[in-house]
Length: 622
Image (cartoon, rainbow, N blue to C red):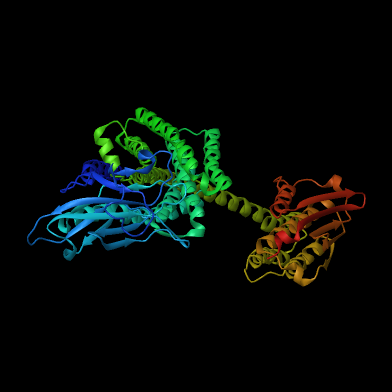
């Protein structure tokens, strides 16, 4: 059970327990008086035609069809002799103001309507009676009630005359509920509306927060209109229009909210509610102040069956969910519906048949303000509980996501470990392949050429020594191209071809070359430089082994953004080109070109063979 629901339940129980005390008093109110319909401000003489009336006097009920007017009420009371505390008069209401006289002397004036100001007294009035004006035995109290505004009814309460210590608690209690409570309600409702409407503004999909914020704001404005006791006469009609618009809007918003909280969303019903809400203000605008009694009687009365639907759907929600939290809304709505009916009886001076209820309504203590505040508390408690559940669900979801993320992280870490092991194995395999190609294309090719000459017997010992030095140079070539500071491929190619020139001449082959690329364009990565030199080395080795050529030309140039290295001989042509005994020469050349993002082309004919490797310059530049 949520704390909000407990607070609402406690408030309901307290109100139910305290309600009878509002009508009870240690001193009995006066139930009979004498009435004189007279608009004069001077006290009428004793010979005036006074007539007895029952209090409280309600003009609409006691004099149907007669327009309300200013009137005098006379009450006689006894004061015991001897020293005693001061006496006073307690009037639960005097809506339109008036004067209070004791024994023919004016003791208090309550402001009434003027041409500039419209007054509407909701709070009670307590008047201290000067001891000098009281006499032991019989005394006479007269109260003049002011002329009510057009369309309004005249009423006079049951006054209470007693010692001030007896009257003060009654006055303070009623003043708190009639004047202080609306101020608290207005402040709390408007602040709550700002907070909830801000949530709805940030989360437009949460319509229930928007409805609750609108209901709280409308009820706060409606209550604010009751707090104002002095209104400029020219704006009184608009003030009442605002009051009726806020009242109807509050009922409509609360009805739509209750339906949505019960899990029922009917757009046609909500549109119908909105249309009915507009009828009252438009009706009042069309007829002016004269139309307020009809609007107040029939249009406001039409909200009673609307409130009954709220009670119905709330009870249905309670039956479906069967939780104590779900019982808060039906309980407060039922109380609000009864309070609305009670206030409707007060507005039209209708006496219920139940004696204790009739005695209660005679005190004219409106309950709708308190009941609507309780409904807002119940709605706020439900929305708060819903918000807390949403936060708890979000927290559970976050915890579940964190667990899933942790599991995924562990799986990814294991996968990364496996991938790293595979990459390490693949790197080792690629390194072995690279070493094999380097041995084959570098030292292997040189040693093969030297071995061929030794076997033919045309290579004396000095040249053998020179060939071995060439092998050492080959190793240096590989090391030089892998030095991080070396980036000029033109220089590396020139050094490479210079070393090969003597070997080619020894085989009877003339080697020439041309580098037709600016130096700044040949800043290649070490790995790319080595791969290109290996391709050139393999091509020259094939010329020595298979071409039977007398001349070979090497050319480096740029063709359409690609670096092109061409080796062309004048030998027997492509038909005589074949793989070396290991079967790896041409395939290694293609593999090296592919690693650089390029390709290898071989053209042959009667004029010789041309081997061309082309790679994108952007892929090999440092």
